[in-house]
Structure formats: C-alpha cells, structure tokens
Amino acid sequence: MVDSARFCTSRYAFTDTVHVVPLSCPQQALAERGGQCANCLERDDFRFAHQIHQGGHTPPALAAYMAQPHWLYIATFANAVSKVGTAAASRRKSRLDEQGPIRATYLAQAPDGRAVRHLEDALSRELGLTQAIRATAKLAALVSFDPGHVDDAHAKAVDQAITTLAALGIASEREAWLPSAESCAVRDPRRSPERALYPHDLRTGEHGFSIEACSGPHALARLSAGDEILYVLDLNALKGHRVLIGNYASPPTTVQESLF
Image (tube, rainbow, N blue to C red):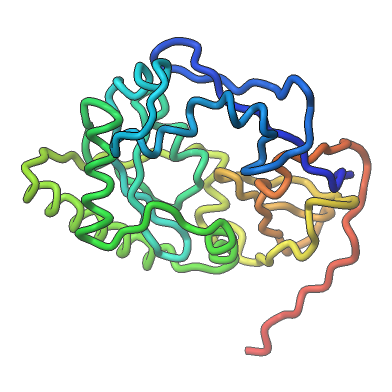
C-alpha cells in the first residue's frame, strides 16, 4: 500500500573527498521543490554540481569531490536515443546502473569534474546529443524494442563522439559498460516477449506483484504466478512515498492484444 503524500528525500552528504552518502530528512517533512523540503535543499551542496564548470558557486566539499577524475560516456536507451553523460571515478559503474540504459560505453577520462563537463557540453553542441532523456520515454520503449536497432544507434553515436573528441585533441577509449545480471531480462525483450505497461498509478492505493528483473529504476513484474504477461514499471514513481509492505493485489488489469 502506498501513501499518496510525498515526503522529502533529503540530501547527499560528503563523507570524504570522493564519496557521498544519502541522509534522512531530520523533520521527515513533506516534499517541496525537486522532492526535497526547503531545509534539505538549502543544505544540499551537491545541487551546484551542474554549474561548476560555468563558474557557479562551489562549496568546499563539492570542490574536493569534483577534483577527482571523471568519466565521459554515451548511453543508449530502448527508444534508440543516446545521451552523453559524466560520472565521477568513484561512481563510474553505479551511475550507469542507476539509469538503466540498454547499451553504454565509456569514452574518455578527464582529470576533474569541470573538464569532463566541458567535454559533455562539446559533444552535445557538436553532435546534438541530449544530456537527459524523459523517464516516460525510457519506460514506454521497454515494452517493445529492437535490440539490433539500439546496438546500431549506439555504435553510431560512439563513433561520432570519438571522432569529435579526436578533433578536440582528446584521447579516447571505447570500453563497454558491464550491466548486472539482474538487468538482463529487462534489456533483452527476447527473454520476456509478452510485455505491457503497468496501467495503474503506483503513487497511491494497493498493488501486488512480484519483481522478475530490474534495470535501473525499471522493473519487470508478474501480477500472479503463471501469468504470461510481464508488466513494465518505473519504480522512480515511488520516490518520496511511504510504502507499507503486505499481502496486496493490484486493481483488475486488462491488456488489449494486437489485432495483427
């Protein structure tokens, strides 16, 4: 059962120069802007990270964190759209694991967070690569997609990015991201060909299902034993909501099969 109220997800704190840990909101307050309460937002130094390469405010703890090496990568999702992104060396794999792409490749290592964000902006500008993809687009594409088409789109984006980096005098690599085994069924529709979007709002009411596989925030779920259809869900919808674990059932679900 899910409480419809949305509570503050608090903030990250720096434990040393290269690691961050999540903290709980001390007031357990209701969420306001961006899923945080005003107090946690004010104390969240990490929110300045995206402007650090543009001369924005840089708290000392964030400056130390951004001074570590960073990686530039290309990630391609089930809709065959590729994005360029960055990850601190200490978050090199977990950053991609959290996003749930179908394919991803590390392109280059930069000395710090400022340098890598300049490279990210350059690839966005020169190749038209986005730096973010809507969650709804990622989820909808997981119902049915062509892995070969995604592979081709990813290879093209990586080739173009490496060519652009070379023109900028940047030495590049081509190292594939290795996803977890638990995500394979989500990323390969041939393992679970009967799929549908979960039609109910996870943010309220009662829901009952068993999780078959997860890739980032995306899950494949079976409503009851023996069901042939697996439902695709975005567990990010539960962010900030209080969930009571128990023996529940989802509302009735009807899937309209294709006429062709």
